[in-house]
Image (tube, rainbow, N blue to C red; front, side, top):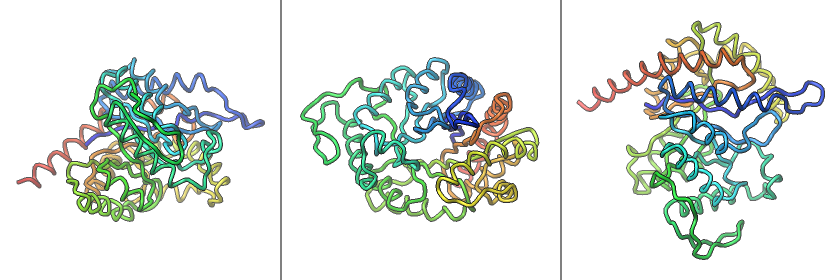
Length: 351
């Protein structure tokens, strides 16, 4: 079981203008967080892509490349790359370069994007939302598999026998599909034989079990062995030495961020009661003391049989020292216990 963290590198907003503040210092802090995650033995750190004033992560590969120079073992991934509005050639080149810098530790999680700011920014039409992702994912796969590419589509100029460089250390460069609960996206990932990262940010985990079943069934129908295709569960969460302390620390930033986004999308306001419900064993949030987080991860593993867990520790701005403590607990207490328990389960199941 891989245990890791993902972040959108959230920043504070000016209360009067709504503009971004502290971008420079937030970059310093995220690099500290990734370095510590590596030092305490976590497996993966992901940076998501956003093009908004409340995040400093419009260029995940750049941040991850800076982190690569400060780390030794941890895998470095996007979480996600909004492939629909990007150029697959540039995405491949960016992450191939990251792979070279990191000595073979780069990954891509490609997704359609839950925010839409990047589409008009890069001249894409939202009415092409699904077609853009499908076409660009196919091109990215060709770029990954072939050094010299010929390709023709509807949403990008054609490529006529052009070499794409540099080539990464890893062959092939790991590519996951990020899914937010859309069945056609699940089937697409499975049919292509690509690992799937499933976001669970609300509701009972059991409700998402049909997506995992669909993924494995669709993979088998497409001729792929489901046992060779890892699944990641990506969720909000936080850790502290005490569970109530973890909730009290996470709630202010979480509520501010989620309610701000909710006003944009027409969601009802988040309440503390609902937040506390989500941190219970059968809620979506991986939040609490180390023992509580271990219990929740193992409970979800019984449901999904997944191979990776990524936790978004900072949904809204958080005290840096508290975040570092959460990373330390996740790496030194939670991860070893979960790995041992999952290994024992797998050994017993094989007997």
